[in-house]
Length: 339
Image (tube, rainbow, N blue to C red; front, side):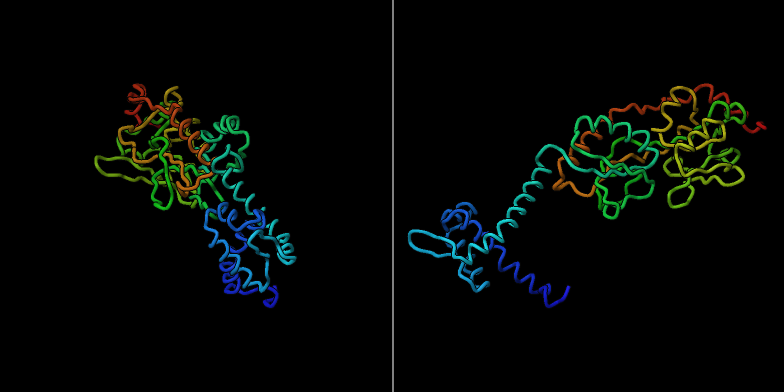
């Protein structure tokens, strides 16, 4: 736009600071027909209204009102100015009312949600039908992505994250613990046995999970008061996937052992379709978190979603069997002799 047809930033800022209060006062006086009643409506004194209108008239170089001791009426110029200003003020009032409704009224509008692929499929997505039934005016856009959430660039309202929360700039509400369990299928255990300690991991076929960064996720184990890490590498690392469900399926198929989150494997452990290896070494300092940017000024749809998901996820059954399967202990011994 030509600089001669639009004021520069300093002129615009000066114009706004000078005229905004005056325009509001002008609209109030025009609507009420009285400086005193306008002051009552705006919650300020009559003299403050008069000063604001006077500044506006000085800025415009036009007289907007005819004032007498008995009445206040618009000049012809004032009538024209009022007709131009009124739609804009009405739009502003409407926008304010809509924003107030979003916070205080029934939950409505669009929610953009992010979750890691595995947790999103198994936990978050199945709960959306119930949430939508409870809040039919809320639309949900679920994005499955294992990368760290960029709330601003991705325009995400709420994010479900796994692991350890190290970003102090976000609000992270812990939903459930995230034990990382080393598991194998009964078929794999029958063929190759199970590791009896951390040093025997190198003798096993391993299934890796590849992170969104491209790195292979390290396995972590609690060894006394310290964390011990293990990186499966060829030749024992026979398979790698960037999808947690594919890792699980490979383990169920007997292709190897893998370290997986408790929510993925708890049902299989209870059913006996998976066996836990070295459960006493499972780290327990991780969690599944519901994250958002600020506690202040949350719209009603976000507050409803956060409360709904927190209650429903914490009520789900992610119990892990207290002790390893006796059969798993028996099968752990012969692993060195497996073909």
